[in-house]
Image 1 (cartoon, rainbow, N blue to C red):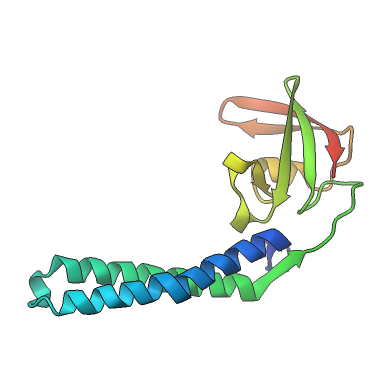
Image 2: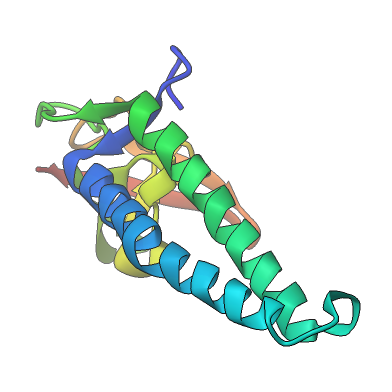
Length: 154
């Protein structure tokens, strides 16, 4: 979150959350409701494990829908960024021990390390925010301090 308490997202991140919300509301929730109704018809609810499981699944889906609605309605979408410094929405190329890596700076709800999308709230993200090409940073990691140099900002 930024200092105003808003959830920061990129345009793509917001689109992904809206897509997930639509899938939950229009596909997964109706399926879960049907499953719950079918399980209810199986008899004694106190000993009906299918009913209990369907009820838990529906509760989880409803909780995620509410969470997504809060995020979507309270989000601050970052639409543009300068190339002069690291900010949410930019791609930043770094050297780490002589090896080049490119990361995309994103909001915390869209971070995905496997896709090299790092949150502006992560230790590396916090260290990078506002920095310029050529600057060096150090980040404390479980393996010790890691040194990075910013090569490019897109």
